Length: 115
Image 1 (cartoon, rainbow, N blue to C red):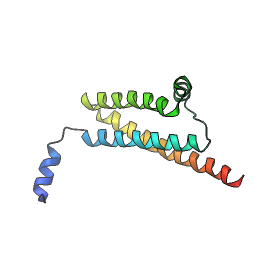
Image 2: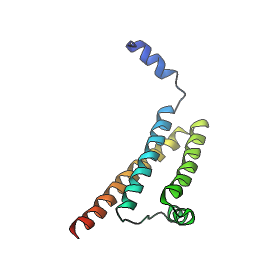
Image 3: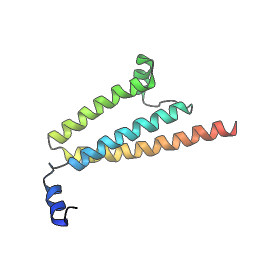
Image 4: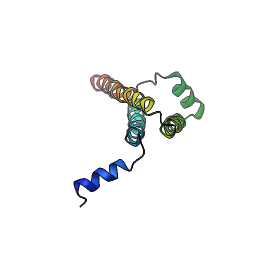
């Protein structure tokens, strides 16, 4: 078990913004899962880019994967260039987006449940 001093020194050894990058990756995963869940529940994708890619690939998972790969590349670029404030803003946006996805999922399931 690491002592408190060792834990602090391990945290300080991480490059600046690593916590934001980890949160960004986590939120991308949550966005993917919640989007797939509400699509399976019968809701429609609102983002025209994602909707186009889903249609182009013919598969929601592949369309979302293409968008998420691009998003992860942008997140890595921001982290690598020290644009931590940009990552922080993106994290706030994607946290709200995941909450919106969950809301849409509940609405879609509520409509199916009543029918």
